[in-house]
Image 1 (spheres, rainbow over the protein chains, first blue to last red):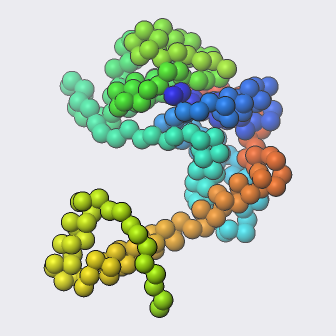
Image 2 (image 1 turned 60 degrees about the horizontal axis):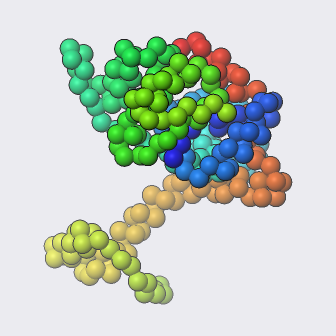
Image 3 (image 1 turned 90 degrees about the vertical axis):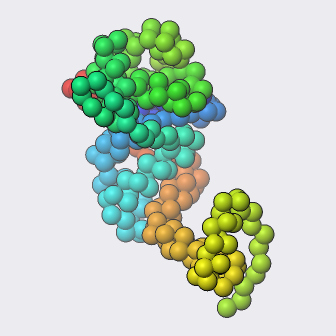
Length: 164
Length: 86
């Protein structure tokens, strides 16, 4: 099973991206794929910028922008057979108190790997998904910044970094 | 209203809940309980029917045109640029 970064999904839908074919082929050929709430959020943010043009073929359904956004997100996840997993719960951080599990895990990770906050959150999701029993073997991305997390992913989580 | 029997497999816990509703006379039978509860569930689904039809339409468009109807031109570069800001 592979964790799919938002960059791969967006690339597969981006006709101006030189990696589009690679991303599309990857998403269509890989059997088991998983993505987190963070991927859903990043994709929502990208799609929302294009909502007016994307709404054209769906005008007859008279959807609100929120409904349209949900329809597109669900379509994309189903189209590429990506399993969407949510991580609930909270965790105690000494002296800081209870925090949502992904944020707390990302804060813990920030001491070990130097990454941008969103990247830390993606790695935290991979770690938490593994702890939940998901057999994640690779982290697929088109964002070269994740190279900074390669060693951590491989040594601590036994997850390969797959840069398309 | 014409009704038809359908075989349904329920977990032990679900069946116990249904039987409790029947014992408390909230419903007269298991059949009535299941019918009413299904009605409630289907009303929930109806709220989302337009979204579900739109999703189906996106798949139909792809089938007809052979192209994924979601085009995010230039957005991969934009996404990576935004990540750099954080």
